[in-house]
Each structure stands twice: as C-alpha cells, then as structure tokens.
Length: 245
Image (cartoon, rainbow, N blue to C red):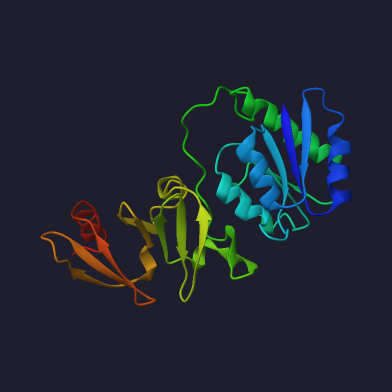
C-alpha cells in the first residue's frame, strides 16, 4: 500500500507517519506540505490512501479532494468535531480527529484493507445497495469565500448538476460539493425533494408557484428565493400528481 500524507505542519505529518509504522501492509509513505504539492504528486504517481489536513495554505484539503476525484481513498485529518464531520461522507473515505487516536486509526486502516480488497466494511462482497437516506439535520461542510460553514439539509432549496460537482442552492447563497447529482439524489428523501430534470433536484416545500412551461406538457416551478426551474415533461406528470394539478 502506497500512502501520501498531506499537512502543512511537519509535526502532524511526523505523528501520522509514526503511527502508520505499525502496519505491515504499507510499502511506502510520501509527504506533502500543502495541497498544490500533493496535487502534483498524485498526478505523477498512484497512492492507495491519502491522509489530508483540511486547512492548508494555497490549496486546502477539500479543494484537493475535489481536484483529484476518485483516484485515491482520502481520509481527512482535522481538528473539527465529529458533529461537523457529518458532511464528509460525500467527499472522503473517512476522517480522523486530531490528535489521532491509534484505535481509531486501526478502524480506518481495517476499512481501507477491505475496500482495497473489493469487500465492504462488513466483510461482504461489494454490491449494489440502497444508500442511507440523509436526515434533515444532516450537515454539509460548505465553503463560502474563504470560510467553511456547516449547512443543514433542511436549509437547501435546490441541488443543481454542474460537471462533476453539485451546486447547493440556499435561500440567498450557494456553494459546491464534489458529487454526481444522481449519487446525491439517491440519498435524499423523495417526500422532501423532487427531481425536476436531469440537472435539478428541488425541495418540494420550497416550491411557491407552478406554471405551464414553454414546451407542451412541461412546467416551470418558482422557488421561495425567486429562482425559476424548468420541469421536464416526464417529471411534470409526477409533479402534477403530487400537487393534484
């Protein structure tokens, strides 16, 4: 197993390297002092597992994960509380709180071994399964300008597909997460959210007005923040049933 440790604090990198010395399956450990250095390394060679800090100069950990995608398993190492880390299930394989607890690291490494061997964490062969539905108080750690903030699912009015990212629309602002819209949609309760089209999923309670669209059979919904969203003809039939139109 080849591992990359990304942290702008030398002592933090040294501590993780020391703790990883207990695992015989590790072949090599490489270090990077920031996200940009790590990005260059990941583009040059393959790493099975990357331990990455969140707050770093130039490029932070979340930006690194968004840039790299699924080429490696990423584990966030952070001083954030576990409550805040609810958000990371869409961006990373797992997380570790600083200072790193050896027992918690054992759990993560066991999970990694199973993932790399093609098995699930519970020891069963990986296969299609219904993902857990996110509760309304689920937290997304989103970036607004230079700051991060926890946003609850109940605050989200709309999810919009944008390349390999999803735009998270709130009442007056928006942010981004790395995920496909279909993957995220599968985690949403269909009694709370409605798929308007291939590129938009909207909160049902946020719909203030429904009008006929330009194309025959289509609809346009207006959300509480004033945004108008086109509803495809196929999805319009479902929406009409929902609202008894």
